[in-house]
Image (cartoon, rainbow, N blue to C red; front, side, top):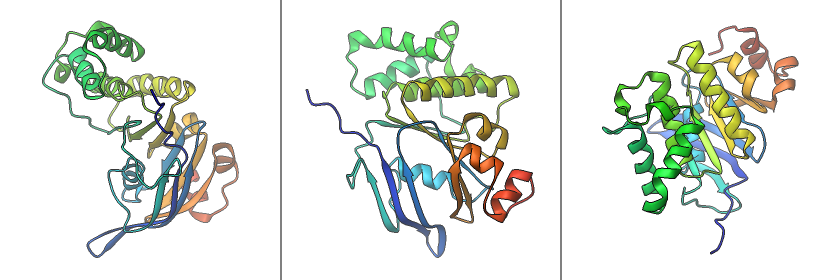
Length: 240
């Protein structure tokens, strides 16, 4: 059986996105390859979610080009995304995961064991039988990560995954994300939390007004930003 083609690198070349008469993204050029997480930061409305949706193949650019592993299209099978407020199915936590496994074509005989493995990976084994919608916000976010991992993704996009969580649950999610990245999955995450970007990022992309203002390795970005906008953002000033 032929191995699936790699989705990496994902390359954005002068990508623009328009919504009616409004330009959402302008001339975004970006390369996403293997390695530590790429973290998108910037004020609300800067285009972070749009970049994630483009990387997932859920949105087509109005201009410019995106390629996945050198191809102009992706079937999305090795891509997964988790949003800030994931929707839970009206069934148990484990059934949410077995449903995701079924959708990816995992054989019925293998689903229960694999679901148990994934719940253990996100520290939810003791919540397997609980209705997913009765889990806490942090538990639901970890369950959403388990469902995403059911796709055996090569690339995992995370859109503000801890924005509504308390510090303890944020720490738990960050530890899972770190472990996922260490396993070889390329993580691309949007966050407004500078502390989180410092903790998780291998490289940082700052978006302001739909444009990339600065992109650099995380250590360089935080120690010596090269643009006024990046310097202001690192200081904690308001950037519009």
